Amino acid sequence: KNEVEQSPQNLTAQEGEFITINCSYSVGISALHWLQQHPGGGIVSLFMLSSGKKKHGRLIATINIQEKHSSLHITASHPRDSAVYICAKENDKLIFGTGTRLQVFP
Amino acid sequence: DTGVSQDPRHKITKRGQNVTFRCDPISEHNRLYWYRQTLGQGPEFLTYFQNEAQLEKSRLLSDRFSAERPKGSFSTLEIQRTEQGDSAMYLCASSLARGIGFYGYTFGSGTRLTVV
Image 1: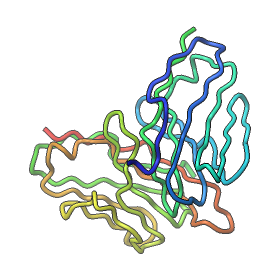
Image 2: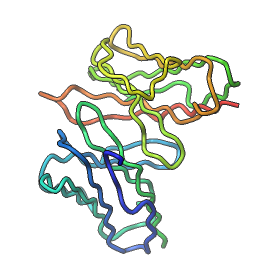
Image 3: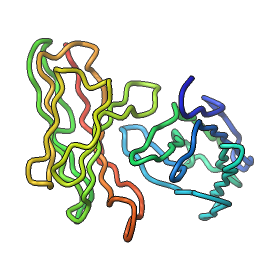
Image 4: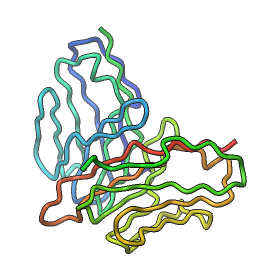
């Protein structure tokens, strides 16, 4: 069993839809990270969470420490949101999930 | 500071050859990480340094792989006797150690290795 599990693996949406990506992790962590990766490889950090909820623009990330679960929400999705979204747990270093490939169509 | 730089961006090599990649982290970051990513997978941890000390190595890092950070600044990752299974994107990231000033990880654009 992977230390970090993400679902779904692939997600397609129509522009404007509300999107949720889920992440579950094993054992305790210093923090849970959400990152975005575009074709070509570049990885950008979106959120770092140790409790509660964070919001940045149309992106919202939540974490439930007791249930070892986090979600990333995208409100009013747009084609430019198309990317791979990866969650990673942190314990001195990041351990990544396999990622969720999101495609948003106009 | 221009972020984390990796060189080269792409490398094609013949099986059996040695290759070396370089990573220049953000200058004030004392931690440097190497990851490997294959198609459709998330990055896999290889090793990390704090200053010049290599603090952890993954079991993925076989004897053919070696990483150094001699002066606590840039790092090199060498793969000896490359195999086709080594074909992947090699990613470098840097951060401050947790504590005062930690604000997350910054990733380089990666080195894509193709072994033919």
